[in-house]
Length: 260
Image (cartoon, rainbow, N blue to C red; front, side, top):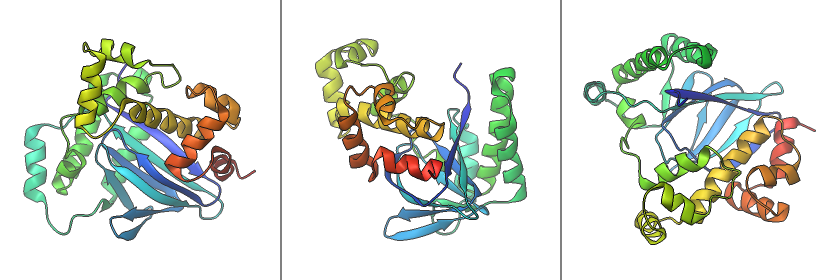
């Protein structure tokens, strides 16, 4: 079942530095404890519990998660349900001030996000979930920021490939099979991705490495097993790609999560 939204928890027990973390769907990051320092353009922005971070699809984030009193905890709300054109128009009409990815939160918006987090999505219909998501979109539109969250309303070809691969990131996914899934030749798939400035192996690696972050956040600490779960036959190759992407080794990242 493809839900209208998804909530992912991220935690850190000590300073956690990451770079080039790709956001595949329009997302809102809510800080629960600690703070996040975002490196945005030529400045550093500090995000606390009183602010939300709005991320459009395909955004690439570099940041530091800063624990306070022993822990950093955040929730990432990813949205798979597009707002209506009229709601986006309302947002554009309400826009004002300097553009920033940070949004000062208020109690009403925090209450809506907390409600979305608390729901048992498996026991709630997609239609009901969509109504709640629309309520959040209305709040964002009234603040004049919804259209920035959904700046790219049409998914790129590489995003469509990423979403498909993300359902089973640990499988082999030979290029020919993926091309067949999208009803095109191998050469056409390669050309379509090249037009967007990327390659198939880069898209696949990004999906697998993001999956590795998710697994580590959910208690997986064996690097050899992690490499297999993310589709890598070689633990060394996995560690090399992970460090090249995020700026630290899998073992170093695990230490920030477990505090061992």
